[in-house]
Image (cartoon, rainbow, N blue to C red; front, top):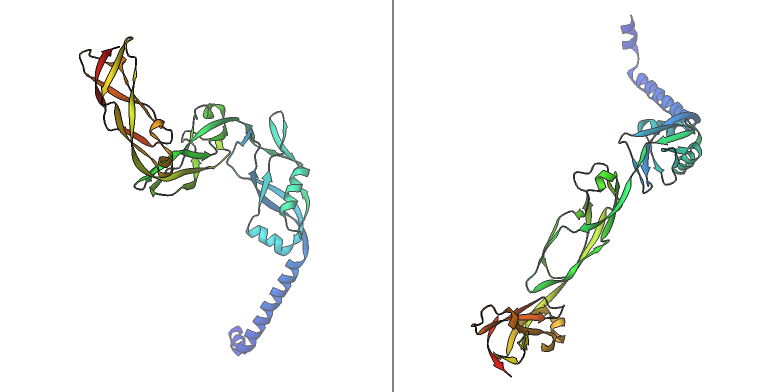
Amino acid sequence: MLKKIINGLNKRKVKVFLLFLLCSVLAWSVSKLSESYESRATFELEYTKFPDSLLLNTTEKDYTNAKLRASGFQFLRYSINQKKIKIDLRQVNNHKSNYFLTETELKVQLERQLPNTISLLELVRDTFFVDLYKVALKEVPVNPNITINVATNHILEGELELSPKVVTVKGPSNEIAEINQISTLPLVLNELSTNFSQKLRLILPESTNNTQLLQESVEVSGKIVEFSEKEFNIPIGSENVPEGFRIKKFPNSVVIVCKASIDRLKTMESSDFEAIVDYATLANSSSKYLSIKLKRKPKSAYSVQLLTNQVEFVLEKI
């Protein structure tokens, strides 16, 4: 009997009926979801901006419940995608090693991050405890783990520049006591011919579990200059000559090859260098040779090479 009734129905009319029914349900749902309701919502808490002397003692997520006045659409959205609230802990309270935020403090932070169309009515807890513990601070130097290969006829002038040169770590006293330096991630720079500046991340030793860096990266820079070489003929001086004697040297001067930046070479003179022979270093009194030692050179010189390492000499009585 039922089958005959169904077969007797006009299929087109059924489709029209179902369409109107669906539209009615949707219109009713939109109307209801647009209305304002009071209900509870759960928020995940993300702690940020810790005081320098404190760290979080757990990796578990924290949540709080709050009573809100909002539209049905907003409650629906929160039920599908839970909202994360950032909690600033710079003003956290402390009482007998217990750290907490009051309801008023937490409410202010929540309200700042909620849309204007949502009203925060109340929180479930009047005091919100945070699992923190005290840590120590230590300043350690930065070690740049960087390999520099300069282009032909170029040099790194001076030392690498670090900004900052020292960083602060915080953590349990027994952990940070073992940290004497902080290295950067490794970096290799090839065929450098110009100045460079690079931001490098810092890495903590693998043995640390509860230690943090207050700064995550440093700036490493260096000055790359083109160099050339120039020969200088400089006189050879004498030291520790026995009283009443003098040393005659053959030859009396030595040629040196200096490598430095082109700009520095232009200002260098022979008088910027000093070469000597030291009679006190003579190991064998029968020897007729003394070694030449470069006693002074400009700080800006990359390298200085003596073309002759020793001279023949005669000790003459004055």
